[in-house]
Image 1 (tube, rainbow, N blue to C red):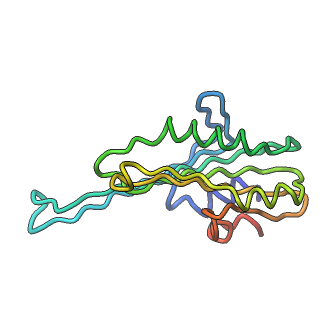
Image 2: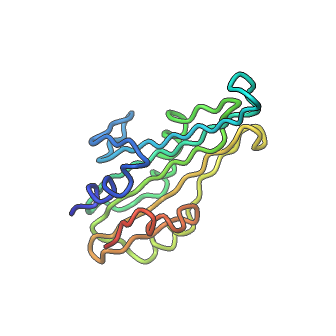
Image 3: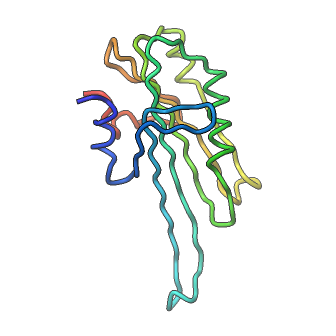
Length: 161
């Protein structure tokens, strides 16, 4: 089973997926959206105590033999952040997850991937924050590498068999 089908099967209960997704200059093999809305009521639904929203955008791209350029990855995160995230008073957390599939990756780039971070907060965190997760899958060794924010996501997504 290919990686895209594995991700779709493992996360279909959480995400709504679209194949071959294009946004601006960026084309992805898979896009997934998770949206969660939480509300607390007092007595009846007319008396809302609070409300907050969480969402996650997952993008997957197979870049083959192209080398990974972390500056371009950072630019991609900024573009996706500006295009998809719209904070309001109910916004709590948004997560942008980028998964790149490569044929081969060198050890120097693995260290950079593990140190990669992307984080933005709104109004000192009162209106929530956005974090970016980077996962790179090496097809030659069947291993995946993740940034600090994505710790544990490889196991949760069951990317590697």
